[in-house]
Length: 433
Image (cartoon, rainbow, N blue to C red; front, top):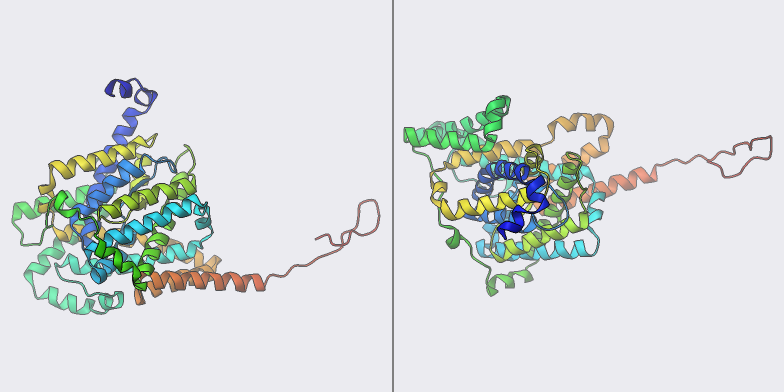
């Protein structure tokens, strides 16, 4: 097998570029996988499991050539709510059924239909997720427990500020988290440092070293071990599918994971000159990955634009870069699981506050309001609805708003038909627009 790989055209032409890119993506993915898992209320190792499956399985399947899949901040809020309401054991069932639905939709050719979803709804969805994610992680930034709902998180922030101001331990944790955010913002402005280490890894590594050297009293990631964290769903968990709320959560998983993956694929296609994404095959690949993650009781996956763009910028040429990144995650999870136990939770919260802020399209909102005010209204209504209700209901409200806007615009279209004279002085051509 080794001789076959060494003698292959890929090894001679692309192996060096793909190997380098895979290491870059691994370094970007590692803190994000752990951070998303912790923010979702599940063991940190399950984030690594999803990243491994996204690399080794989804990475091998046809669809998109260079985008990278794994646990995403965009599903953190929904996963947290599902685990809180139905328990960790039910998560595998939700992800498994969502994956099977994705595979079915891809096989039926529905993948390209997602391109018809209003971009305003997608941006509004991400903005709402970003707002709830930031609000929740501000509590983790102070080593405090966050309230359940989006409005409760936001409404309790003044109390959080008062409690934090009166606690030296909480202020220490906030300093660690704020320092992490500062590194995330400033690190890319140092070209040599940015080339050596991705900003998320540099920020978490620096925070971990500072906490360890100074012996700061902040909470750290709890480590259970890879095998102990993997808990396939049982028969009792499948019985939850009779609950309408569970089915709604499955549909939300399916819709959001599919839309985010396919919109990410469209964005990644604009970053390189390689083969274009085949949307239906990509949807099947995402579904297969989610089905396996469901069997393992892990987090749902989507294509992640941060990892994908890092893969392209690092010079990846083939899908082997994303497969190798999954192999590095597996090696780390097997050989160095205890390393997760030294990471401060406040540092991971800082990474996710930064990620949540990037989900909010602040730069696009102004031009959108000036040029397409209806789209801007749909975006803002979707975001506010997600914060005020929950992910599924907020997305449904956004979709209904988009349909209502399209119907309004269609009903106000004016078509004027004029009779144009035929060249040569002949009779007018009736019906020429």
